[in-house]
Length: 583
Image 1 (cartoon, rainbow, N blue to C red):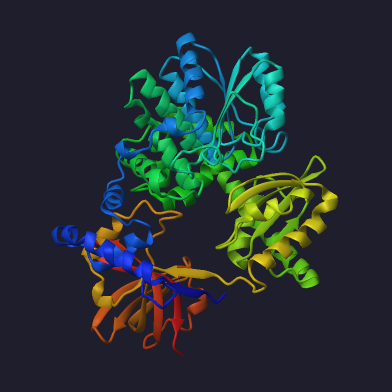
Image 2 (spheres, rainbow, N blue to C red; image 1 turned 180 degrees about the horizontal axis):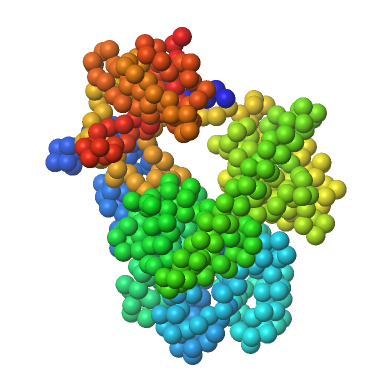
C-alpha cells in the first residue's frame, strides 16, 4: 500500500504559525550556551522541540531520565487512602488477594506487588482470571475466593475501573477493594475503598499515561516513603519497564524514567526469572523493540492459551530448575500461539475480503467467527489494522455473547468510537489505540454498520492512507557517528517518543545489491551525487521492490539511523522504512 510521507517542519507558512516559529527560535537561543559546550547539532535541537521539549529543564530531564525525577505518588487521588490501608496490612500481617489481568501488564504488576509484600514477610494470594470462563477484570468468582479464605482486602492491578457491580458485591461480603488501573473510567467510579487511576477526571496527578503496573508501582513508592525505605521500590523497576513497553503506552515524562531505569536493571543485574528469559532469547540488550516482539509474546502466550498464572509463577520464581521448565512452557505455548495466529489471521483476511466486497465497508473492519480462539483475536485485530490500515475489531463467541478486541490506526481514537456505539454494547473498555468489548450476537451487523459510519465521519469520507511521519530531511554528509550516538540518548523509544525518522532525496543505488530470501530483506549502498557521500542501507520485508532495488536506480528514502557493530568496528547503517523510485 502506497504511504504518505509527512514531513514535520518549523518553517512559517508551511502549516506553521509565526508564533511557533518564534517559540522555536527562542528555544534555539536558550540552548546556545549548552550547544557550544556539548556540540549539539541543529537537527537534535529540532528533534527535541518536536517532542515538546522546549526548555533547559525539560532537556535535562529528557537526557537524564533518573529515578529522583519521578512525581510524588501522593499526588494521585486515593493514594493516601490505599497507602494507609496497606500499611495496616503490613503491620498486622494480613493476607490479601492480588488480582491482575491476564496480559503482560497485569501479570507483571501482580508479580511485582506479590514480591513487594513478601519483602515485609507477607504471603499473598494471587488471582488471575480465566480468559474464557471469567473474562476480563474483577469477577464475583475472585471475590468469592477471597471470602472463602477469610481475606478482607483485594488489590486489583490493570483492571477494575469499570467494576461497579463487583465493587458493590465485594462490599456486601465485607471485602474492601483497592483498584490500580489506567484505563478510561466510566461516568460512575466503582464504590471501592480506593481507586487509583490517573485517567480519573478528578485526579490531578501530573502524568496520565502510566500502565497498570506503573500505577501499582506508585502505590509501592508511597508505602515505602511512609516506611522510610525509599530505595526499595527501585528493586521492582524491571517489572514496570517490561509492562510499560509491552502495553504500548506513551514513553514520555514519567514512563520514560521508569522504562529507562528498569532497562538498566534488566541489562546489568536482572532477577533470575528475567535473566532466564533473556538468556533463552539470546538478547544482548533489553529494549522496547525486543520487549514488544520477543519477551511480551512469551509472557502473554500462557494466558492466551491457558492459565496466565503460569506467567506469575515464572516471574516470581528464583529456582533455576523450575525456571528452566517454566520458560520451556512459555516457549511451547508461544509456538502454539503462532500456529493459531496464522490460521485465524488467514481466515480473517478471507472473511474481510468477502464482507468488504458485499457491504463496501471501506473505513473499518468488524469480523466475527464463533470458533476463533479468544486468546488470539487481539493479535489478529492488530494484524488486520496493520495490513489494511483500518481500525479493526475481531469477535468470537463465549457463553452466547460476542467478545472481542479492537486495535486502531494513526489518527483514530477507537475508545471514543466505541463510546459512540455504547447503546449497542454490553460493555467496553480500553484507550485510544486498543480496547475490548462485549456485544449481543444479534447486534453485530448493526454495530458493524454504525462503527463504519463513525470511521467514515472521522476520516472525512476519504479512505485512510498509511502515514509515515518524518522528523527532518538530511543530506548524507550530515550523517555521522556523533549524530548516531546522540540519537541513542533519545532511547527508550515508544509512543510519544518514536525513533527519529529522516528523509533524503535524489539518491542513487550503487554497487552490488543483495536480497536475503529467508528474511525478505535487501542490503545495498546509496550515493548522494551532490555531497559525494555513500551510505550503507538495509530494507526489511522489501520483497515487493526486488525489481527496483538495483544498481543505477534513483530514489528518495525515509529511514532511521543506527550504529552497526557487527564486524567489531562501528559504522552507520540506514534502516529504510519506505522508498520512492524516480523510474
